[in-house]
Image (cartoon, rainbow, N blue to C red):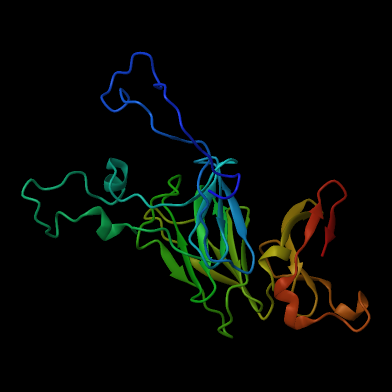
Length: 276
């Protein structure tokens, strides 16, 4: 390699003094001490969530596949359709001896995705990795606790009255909250079969940016705070409450409403402050 990131080192020793296998009993020709570079298409921005099941960060940029990083190595998230666990999840406890596929014997791939879905936004909801694709307004999610197992039927679509695209997702109490710029939807918890029920919680008021909605506590209850098209709103599971009803109260001339989808925010839990 022309750079210093990857080095091929010639060695003449064996890895073990008493190797047990025929492969390890050979002289090593080279050692790969650093991983080779690889790339994916660039996106507008990244969204990420922590998977407690694998103790890895799951990432997406809206253009490439889902990624996972353990703090050292960044990898493309792969899907499992062949393991015993995957087949059991798919409802196939064993394959028929004759290998024929009938209504009683279906391969795991019939039920499971061979690749994780692509999306623009990703959150963790009670052990499930939930992925939202803005282009189609589709929500996909995995088997709980198994980020590499994605049932085909575990997806649904969000539509508001204005047919606006999804702008973000968040978790609140036991709900998965999905929103557009003009609507908020409450989803979950899923039923015994793993399917979500979608309930419109607000029509006409929503949030404009996934990266600007934060969880905050006020008067003993938690809720979501973030920018809407005409101000800042607070949502605690009931009807959204206006916090700032006019941008001009804060900034002379208001804000560029056409760029509110680029807004970002942070909160101070110690001082209970919201920074937009």
